[in-house]
Length: 128
Image (tube, rainbow, N blue to C red; front, top):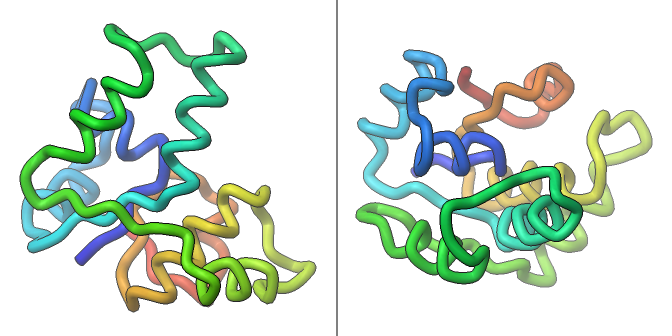
């Protein structure tokens, strides 16, 4: 299993050429592709703030993207919420990043991300 960061999910669904070769390979080889609940929220917020344009309604896009083969929805469990809060002050990301990283840690999975800040956080295994 792998976990996709929000941008990796958007690119995989809409423009996979934006992904690195290693990211595309990891996605292709994964038995399951987890998407954190916070990524759904983050995409909806980006659309609402006109920072992301989709070719269909955001809820339709999210539902269709979650229905792709191998994709599983990773809900925000109490364990993930607490783990996100406990990542420490040195964690380089925002709250959505915390929840995505905590999801990857909870599922003992590699995180697919281009975000250098997250890739520098040594508690989580990443690929790009």
